[in-house]
Length: 385
Image (cartoon, rainbow, N blue to C red; front, top):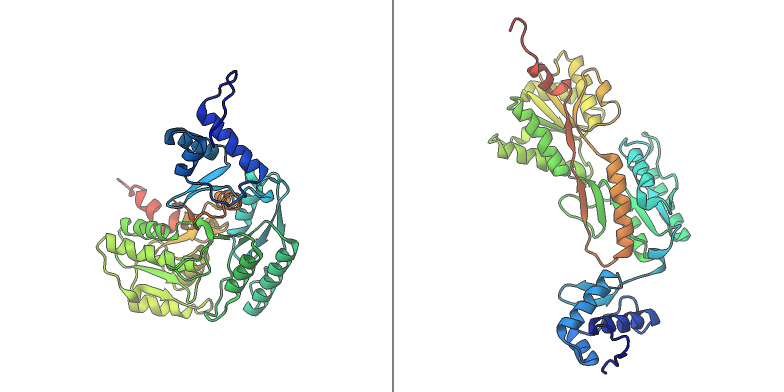
């Protein structure tokens, strides 16, 4: 088929190709997700050059009507009602909302994001008290999952449960249910698979490996040579990422990687800290989060160990009480509000482009220097100097 050109209007040939293809898309001749004919086929159809057809296709992409998939061809965009509608509802599924300090400001960031202005965030209570049994938290998470599916939310922001049971499949069960319902999921802070594995969903959080590296490197630069790390057994993927950064910092600075300097203790075992100090003689601790750093600091001070005189400490997260500890805590500041912004942006983009590969959107942390790392004390001039 050749185009008939109006001799009075005489639009450029590429414009004629563009207009006719746009009309084909608008009329439903080419459905959302359908592959368009190849450029060679369009050249034959319109009796136009490949350059002319290429320009028309570029304009269609610029208009957001088609998308190019590398190695496959051009497809009509999945322009569905969700993409153009206002008033979408997104579910929040955050079982640790009342127990982990970072999630409240992350949620506030999502609510304040420019993309959220015309939409709604739904919160069904899936969180429990700090003493609540794991089984109860898992049960609540599954109930909230079912409520969101019944309500047909446009997407879900999910912070997987921090399971203490490696055989538990609650996180996987929840995500699979959303997948079957066709509801996109954006993970907050962590994936549910152990590091370094990842699932096929978008993740928004911090670069935990770099953060662990930066915290450890700061202690090394303060002169520490026996840097220990305080962790807990069976933690989420974020802890293992931070441990990877710790190991990398030791390697980069030529310090031996001593597995005996990795202290993994239960939440209640303060006596393990005393035994560890006696046996390993660390001069610094990189703590996988500020809660661990706070407990460590209280235990050290109770033992008569000076912070930072005898042992330096750096945490991760910069939670609200970090500066209020007996020795103000040096820590890596987590940009929670910005994570919320990025999460909302990722969700809107995922709805618009469901075919995109899964992404890790990782924000950088910065070090907040306080007294516990010894940097401030070292910077003060000596008396009489």
